[in-house]
Length: 245
Image (cartoon, rainbow, N blue to C red; front, side, top):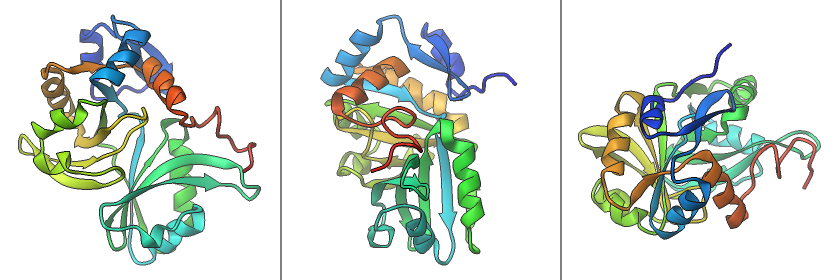
């Protein structure tokens, strides 16, 4: 079976990206400037990352908060509307099956983002524990991350409401008439945003962002060095099923 591609595959190649296999996807590890320059640019200005390989899910229905609480060591019930939390799926020994982000969209409706490499096992894990709730896999959604100290200024040109978000808060918004969901979150240690956008509109949104002077495309190489510098864990490295608390 060949590698999957994200909706931005053609754009990555147009930008001269070096593509590599990652979590079953053909992904850009770097662009012509190189990993060090991409890393430093994200720290100084704003970088755009394609993270569409991540899994985007919705868990909804009566008892959804309690269901999620039974699977992660997090107070899901106390989450405010459009607030998100970092969480971990754990095995019976306390090892980590995956790390994820849970966002409350409604009283019993949650938006869940999981790692690409664990996506299929996470979906199966959730399905096995459903007790009347519904699990929806958002297969037609892309995910873009805008990260860096200038990210908020850039976001003001797209959505004034999103530009006012605080860390780990989200909102539904429209960009150029397209419905998106934006959270103030990221994986770089910088201020920034993640934008869930319909796959059919992902390239146009990415081009819009890249047309704004401070924004440059950033690959997986710098994403890894940025998260290491920020002290953020990567599943399969610092987090595994065999590493207990």
